[in-house]
Amino acid sequence: AFPVSDSVSEGLTAFRKWLDGFDLEDSNVKDSNIRLFQRKHKTARERWVVPKDFPSASVLQAYSKPVVDSSREAFSWGVPDMDALHVFCSKKMGWETAETDRAIMPVLDEMKKGLRQTRLDAFFMRSEDNIKFANVRSKRLREVLDIKNSNDVEKGS
Image (cartoon, rainbow, N blue to C red; front, top):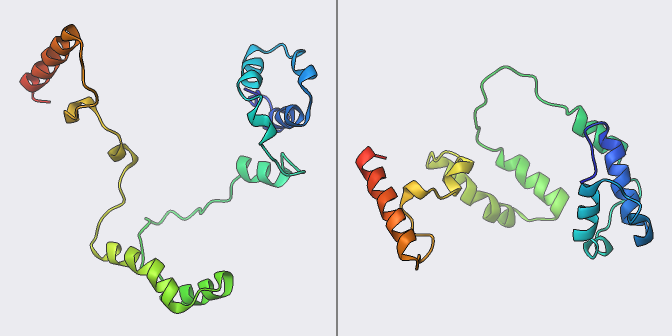
């Protein structure tokens, strides 16, 4: 709702100003998208908490100029260094070796099975999957769906 196309920093600063402001100021807003956003989120605004330095210059910098690996080598998964993980989990989280193993061993077992990471689209249902989404009561709509399904079967999809 708060425009960021010209400047992300200015848009986030305007959002912060609205968060910290009073309702009387909201009526002076000319942009209808911002007014709609303010109206829909009026009560949520009271629960939202942002840090004092929001929008943070370091976060904006990391967002606009991220540090990425410039390697051109093909990525491949490796086996985690369990000794290093035990030390890390012990120092950072106070975990004992058994607790680290309890968290990490199921992941290693899955890696050993050779399963690949699922694509995001695998979590969405499609009408072609012939999964019944709803109980359709309308006779006309059922007829349309039956015609569509029979046409799909004829086309081989």
